[in-house]
Image 1 (cartoon, one colour):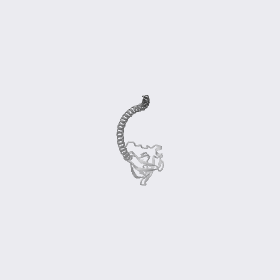
Image 2 (cartoon, one colour; image 1 turned 135 degrees about the horizontal axis):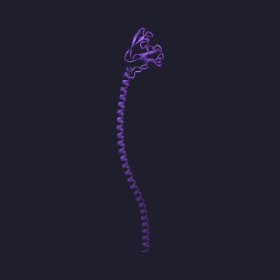
Image 3 (tube, helix red, strand yellow; image 1 turned 180 degrees about the vertical axis):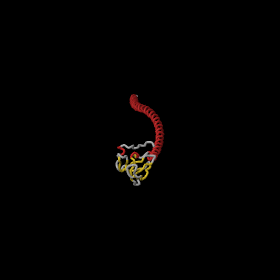
Image 4 (cartoon, one colour; image 1 turned 90 degrees about the horizontal axis):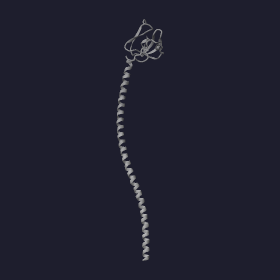
Length: 182
């Protein structure tokens, strides 16, 4: 399968620490033997993807002592071990994560579509409010212009009343003077 990473007998790959997990490679069975070497008795066959615990490793002989989940212990060729699960074992999890990611992408895409629709609606409302605001500003400017004339007219009106009062006082004085003279 894609992405297999066989540990091809390198010293660093075979010097695994006791207690760490290892995996049998994809697509075949390997022998678990009672000791190191092909002449040792086969204890059982281990299928690809079987999880094992590494107990010790012998880089010179190329064997690793392992324990299965059922507790069986024995020796296997180190070159058949991987430090991580083979692709076949990981595939269901990867597929599930892919499906979850696809669902999340679809959900986010729908949210983006809704957000874009809402943004467009807000833009239209803003444009309408701006247009209304411009109309109100024009009305306010007209009211200010007219009210500035009202203030001027009121000032003129007060001035004319004062002038009229002065003229009436003069007329009354002249009438009084006329009566005295007549």
